[in-house]
Image: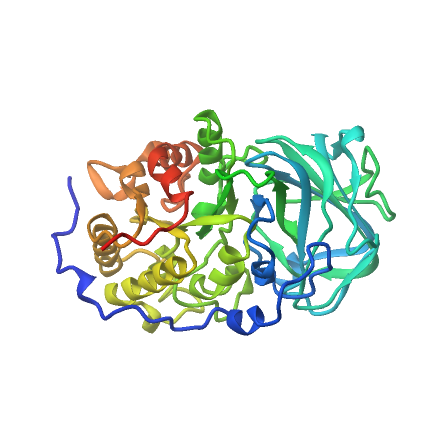
Length: 452
């Protein structure tokens, strides 16, 4: 039975876009001047915008950072070493990292930091181990609300490889800035400094990425090097996919790009579960600030960014009427279009191409109140607007890739994780396979204003 709603009046007649929130003080910070490449950055992450454009760095991995869902989910360390496992998208000849204490209540002291290729489990390839320094110093303190970028180290980083970033925190602390749903196991050691150890004495495993916001590689100033930032929600971040498998659709897309010869197009996944386009969380910081507000941090702050993929919006419709989110927060289609247009304007003003992602089906989801006929009508209208209004520089039709053709308001059973909201591993592959690589290659060149 075909349950596609009847065509509705297009929301394209909405008023011109206007930014409802400024990008977290970006303009005043630009007036601070150019920071030295090797200085400790005790500023918000998008301060990288002040570095020279020909610096040659490109993001190979990243996370959308937020606070923990509950105090019990905060990673507590008592003089222990974190070994965080991440998967690269592109390779390079040097590496550097960015650490974030944005949501921390207190300063964090890091006494030792290392980066290496991961061998397996919590073990590293010994010959690849490099000590990381910050403004030439091995030890640093990250104030609450700030981020820090490391000095670069010479390291041959392969594409599609597992890296291990090890951090020794000598004090008893709470790492309150985190990507809580990593779907990748990382490790906490027994007490002690094991940042440079080939094998880690593992006390416990954690399915999250505390503190680590980005890994960059030196692409040697190659003209075709570019990072694509994915500004997304839980479907982008890989919710309910197989643990340790890198089956998030952005990872699978990175594999396709490498196989197609686009060796220098990096994918930096800024997905945050529960994230919304227009609003931040009322209660749970794990959902992250609104996509409109984190554009400066998570897109403009990504090294070498040339394009952004916007895969957020379904929670704007789903959350209102659930738990702590009042039903009055349900946006209209016009409200959502205005938000998307504001993102488009932000991107184009900075020469960044922007690609939209249609919203996937949610009918029948196990989360009470998330799906209603009214919300489905708005989802349908917005998807039609994305496909036809030609506002984005390209569109990834995730909805078409994973919906049931006989019941388009629902996920195809073969692609359903079981909660009727998040695609499973096969569904993630279907989304990655639906991306037109020629369109993405063009977006990776950045935005160029059409000739009149």
